[in-house]
Image 1 (tube, rainbow, N blue to C red):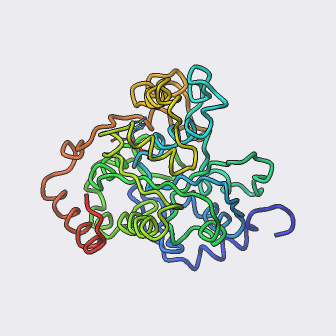
Image 2 (cartoon, rainbow, N blue to C red; image 1 turned 135 degrees about the vertical axis):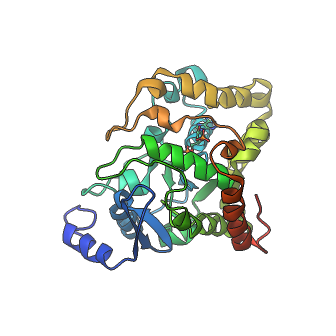
Length: 319
Ligand code: A3P
């Protein structure tokens, strides 16, 4: 487009009308585009991102399925990259939701009619995406930019998504009553930014083929050993912690700053509200590993895990 509009309205309606569509958990439509089930509020942005984004070799892209630790990864990556600019006591994280410091391509930057001006941002730019690896614009896959993917146990991700949906505010959505609403669709991978298995597998394979460009992280591993994973992240980004930084406790400071308890208790995250009304606190719930057992029956869990295991068979990836 020549007028700075991302994708003209008629064009997008025409495109979307041709995509396979299904009902999301909350009754709103999902559209299948480039192998991803995009919720209605993300489809315009997904197309525009695909058509317009130009990567720089220095870009850092944080990718995930929703509810897999995206907020945490944003806080960590932002802190690692900017550690020489802000000391932990002056970090913008103390007053800003991580999603406003590292913004999503599909649901934020490219969601508006006007194309975002990303050229003026200083390097390294940090962005985030819920798209699958195969759905990334060619400019990203073909560039030297670095992608950090975070995934999570599929049952915990599912339960976390269920709880988030109940607090998530959009127009024309029905309130969710029970987690087994539409469980058949869930088992077919028909969920926001699903199928889960295609999301994880795409990045998993990419991380094996291009380990210097794609880092694959698991939420549970970060919970288990944040120091080790912060070092891994910094090394991957090409800015390893120096001996002096280690001695001075910089890694501990960052892990404390970004910890669930610290972020959750900040004023901005307790009382802030997203532009469409979702409370910031919805991004900070329990942060427990294995919390799924409070919401899924053993038979639902078994059914869903079996499907995930079949899809991941032979990949070397398991949960
Ligand atoms: P629960 O719903 O299981 O509590 P996302 O950031 O991708 O939306 O994922 C949200 C999940 O990550 C929620 O899980 C949330 O509580 C948890 N979370 C948010 N911030 C976190 C942090 N700093 N450390 C660990 N977990 C965090």
